[in-house]
Every structure is written in structure tokens, then in C-alpha cells.
Image 1 (cartoon, rainbow, N blue to C red):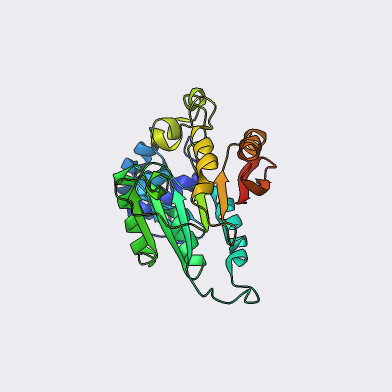
Image 2 (spheres, one colour; image 1 turned 90 degrees about the horizontal axis):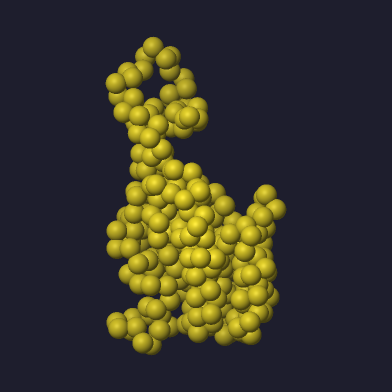
Length: 281
């Protein structure tokens, strides 16, 4: 069943109208031959975002296709928490002013680049390196950075998690310490994937969803390895989106490393665990 909202988005897209313009038109003025193919695609569970080729996030439109996860509203909370932490990295006594040096961030599993690009647009003097194992996803991220005018402060590289930031990395390009590492990693347990709605399990990239048996494969790697790449002064921070049931396990993982302080779980509007934050000691 296609919702009225989605139908309006699809019809407006097919006719080259805004949704407001569509609503103002009379039904008999619309040519069904132009929009019916899009409705047929949606009826087969293809996500609306893939059909129209974009998805809103943080008030911005991001180009998407099947190579990238569709940006979700809950991920905006992750961006919000990073933005809130920004003053921590400003020189003492200059809160609200521009930092003297650039703040460096890495967005691991960048996908469409929505996190990296939104942060670059909202935070002055920030440079972001977006890492993804999918070259096709990185092409989309680059297009989005150019579209939103931040390509000079967002760089996208192919890599697996934090490997590109180690001294053992073949190209050894990214050895500087980072102020912030942010990620919306795959965190859905493997056995849960097949229970998801068709729009997700049949259309979105599996590698962006599947977090392994317990859903923590990538989260575990990030928590263990991030301190090796975060600055000590000012103390670097790790921000992760997590599953609604993963808070206690993620806190335990962080505490076991002995390398974090200010460990917190932030709940979303539904009262569910959603964001992990911590600072390196």
C-alpha cells in the first residue's frame, strides 16, 4: 500500500512539479501515463528515494541509488550530537569563534556522505574524510559533496573501517590523529535481516545493514581501534549510531578497553538507545 504522501512525491517528481504545486492542481489535469510507471515500481517495494533519486536529510537533499543506504531521520541525532560537541575543540576562551586550526573528522562507512557533508556544511573549519569499502557509494558521496559545495573540505577514500588510518595501510595516506570519528555502521544482527520490510532487505545494500551474528561486528572493531587514531589533546571523541537494544553491550565493550571516558548512550525520541558517545583518555 502506497501512502498518500509517497504517492504525491512520486507523481510530483514524474510531472516535474513540487509537491505543493501538485496539490494545487486538479486531478483531471494530471496525465497518469507520466506517473503510473513510478507508482508501479513503488508497488513492487522499490523505495521512493531510489525511484526519485534523492532523500532529504537535515534539511538537505542527498543523491541516492542502490549502492548506498537511504539516510534515515534517526541518524540526524548522530549529527546533532557531533555538532553539540564542537565547542570542545575550540581554543580556550574562543567559544563561538572560528578555531585557529582545522578540526579533522572521519566518517566511517560514509555511504551517501550525508553525515560527512552535513557536518562540513554546519561546522566551520572542519575537514572530513569519508571512508567506504564501496567505490560506487563513494561516487555518490562525491557527487553530493560537490552539489552541496563542500567538496574542498570532504575527501572520500576507499577503505575498510579504520585501516586507512594505520601506519600499516599500504598507501599510508591517513596517519594524522583525528579529533572526531563518527559512524553509522552496520548493526543489524544477520538473522534479523530477513525479517525486515522488503524495501530494506530486498533493495538496500546488505553490507550497509548486516552487523554479523550479534550486530556488533563493526561496532566492536570501531570501539577497539578508534583510540589509536584519536587525538589525546583535546581528547578525541567517538560517535556511533547503534541498535535500540545494544546500549549495555556497547558500554561494556568501551569499558573493557580502558581507553575511554565520558561514556554515554543517548536515547532517541522513542526512548530507545540510539547513539554511543565517548572520549579517548
